[in-house]
Image (cartoon, rainbow, N blue to C red; front, side):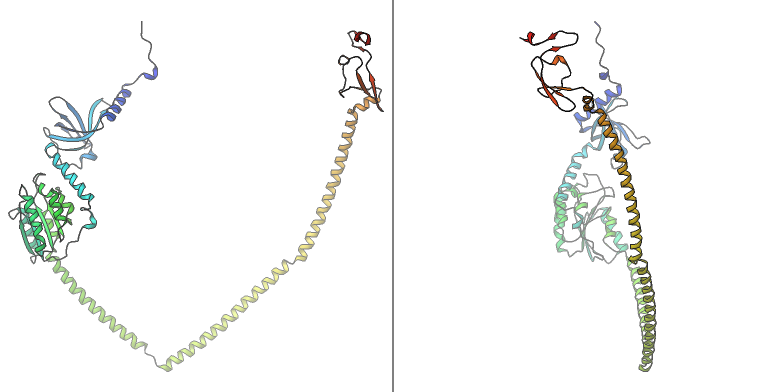
Length: 458
């Protein structure tokens, strides 16, 4: 027996099925961490990363879009063991099961990276990384304390900068191990010595390296000790792309040790130029002040006037003000006279006598129109009333009664229109032209039927 045809609403297209499968996968799996070997890595012109993650049992297609991978320091290569975090989905166009990667790191560095991020969040929650607690560096420090390896290239780079820029600086080197098991204890001991060195600024520095090499500067104890340092601090760990926890808790972060040396000291040539500029500015200011004082003396001398001359000026000024006052008064009087004349003309124009005469004429005209309309309306209604009276008289039943007819009503006052509705000995009334007659039915004769009377009724 053939199967029943399917409901048209239940038939899916390949696109519908792929879409449903994608939603089930995304809702069921969501975001996952995945560890495996990276292979088939390629970067098309769009900048997106496409690769495969595999182990001995399976392989998964992966994609990391350019808006995510451009922030990654890791440069993937085939054969690399990686740890990725992403969203599991289905590429509907080919029905490919894949993972959209949001984070990727080498498998060996993953635990360290997560510990780094956890500590950074903890310190940020306590406010140790807040910008508000950062202290400014002194403009011209006399002594700087450097916590680094005495044999490292970082120290030599900083000393070279200071010899060139600011040879007056006193440098105190606190030699420590910058990696390995002894690094933490030595760095903490060096930070404890800072308060007794009378230094103006402290620098903690080392050259570049891997995340494991820089780990001594990502330790919580080192970060807290650096944050508690009594003088402004600079963190210069690794190269520009390297970032340590000490960079966040220090007052200033320098991309390299050489940059730290430049940040904490002024430039000798700049100071000499500033001194020359200050000397020239001071000379210019003195000359300008002398010129201003000389000009002031000249002006004061010119303002010295004899009392007789001043009195004459005041007398002339008084005459001038009196003349101006007289002119102003005359001008004001002329304006007021013109204004008064205008008010008089307006008063004449708005006198009520003319307005009353005009209004009286208008009232008379309106009264005449009212009388005419009333007479016309009365005539119209009189004619209409006469017509209605004639119509009513023509339709009145009394006219019919006057011609010899009568209106018969039963004992309930209802008009009798059929003999069949009467019965013998029934009381009835007949309305005539000039009165009413009360009668009793003796017999009834219905047209086309038999007569009924008192004998039959008995």
